[in-house]
Structures are given as structure tokens and as C-alpha cells.
Length: 290
Image 1 (tube, rainbow, N blue to C red):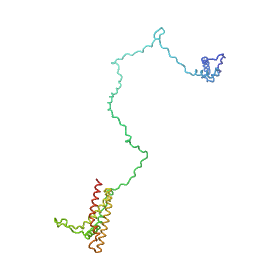
Image 2 (cartoon, one colour; image 1 turned 90 degrees about the vertical axis):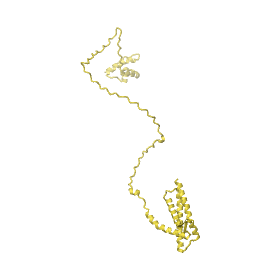
Image 3 (cartoon, rainbow, N blue to C red; image 1 turned 180 degrees about the horizontal axis):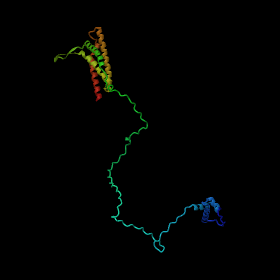
Image 4 (cartoon, rainbow, N blue to C red; image 1 turned 45 degrees about the horizontal axis):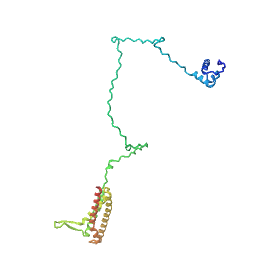
């Protein structure tokens, strides 16, 4: 088949004149021709070919149906109402199954108004948790209860100190006799029979204070200032005790019956020094605990 040949015209055809020809061409081809085919068949330019192609591909316009006229000579009859079924007799008909009525849901009681939640304190906010894995604790072997509660044994030390105490006691007593310490009546005119040998005051004063000062220094229970004083006074007491033992044994080996005046002067001041150091240490320990 060939496209219809159009007669030449002095005026260019319009879009309305070209649309019927394009429809005839489409019916002849059995499909909507392309824009180039329309240009060649209708001998028009690209704009008119595009407009004709748009008119061919446009969907058809559906016109609305005319509304029926109620009054007038051209009035159309209205459709009759559908027949209404008569009301069935309740005695002869069975009642349809009643639908289950859902239970009545009571409205929820109004909940009491909660107090407003205060904004969290940023300072009290928990610290951010680190994403690094925490190493698992290393299991340790349990310590037997006997090891935990076992106290150190001190009785061997007491046995070792016993002979030293006897030697020191004897040395100081004899030193006191060489330096003028002896028997005196403590209550003359009141109880003349109460007599005391003052030579025992030297070992009791010097060695007892040295032992107590060592305890205050090394036990860790005394305040810092009392520990410092106890340290130096304990060293001084032990040094005086060692010098007293040396002096006594030298004089006893030489056969002296009395001590020189210098040794007598130093030994006579020992009770006074022990009294002062003991009172000072007690005061420092009491003031540190209060």
C-alpha cells in the first residue's frame, strides 16, 4: 500500500485539515505513523507533524451523559422504585442468629497526675563506661585460716632476755653501792622499820624506760612526734646503760670500793633524767591521741 497523495494547494493546510488525513494514513498502515512518516506523507514541517501526532495519540474525550429533564415535554420518566418485600410474620419466621455483643469496656480510671521529673544533674550523671574490655581478675590461691590468724611467737625472746636482765640488774645494783646508793628509811619517825635499798632504782629506772621507749618507737601506735622523741631517748638510755655496765665491771676488776667523783655525779643524775624523759614521752603520746 502507498500513502494517499494530496493535491497541492496554494495555502498551507491547517492542523484540523491534516488530522483526518493522518487518521486515514494510520488506518491504512494499521498503526500510528511516526513523525517522519507524517512529514513525508502530509508534506508538512516538523512542528505540524508533531502536533498531528499528538492529536492522534491523545486519549478520546468522553462527553458526560445529559441529565434527565423532570418537567417539560421532553421529560424522561424516572426509574420506578424497587419493590419492597413485605414484613415477615414473627410467629412464622425464625429469628436470625443474634450476633454476640462484645462486653462493655469500662473506661479506665484517670491515673493520678505524677509529679514532674526533674532534670538530671549533669554532675551526678554516671561516668561513661569505657568500651575497653576489663581484664578478668587473676585467681589467687586461698590462704589457710591458720596462716591468717597465727600470731608471732615471743616466748623465746623472753628466755633470751632473762639472763641479760639478771646481769644488768646486778651491775646497776653494785654500781649504786659504789656511787653512794644504799639502804635508807623511807618514813623516818613514822615507820622506822620501812627500809629500802635505793640501789635498785638504777636498773628499774634506766632499763624500764629504755624498753618502753623502744616499744613506742617501733610499734607504730604512737604519734609521729612521740615516736621521734622515743627513738632518740631510747638510744640515749641504752647508751647510758652500756656505759654504766662498762664502768662497774672495770672498777670491780680493779678492786675499787668507791667510784670516782665524775662517775658518781653522772650516776646520781640518772633518776632525774629518767623522770623527765618518761614524763615528756607520756605527754607527747597523750597530746597526739586527743
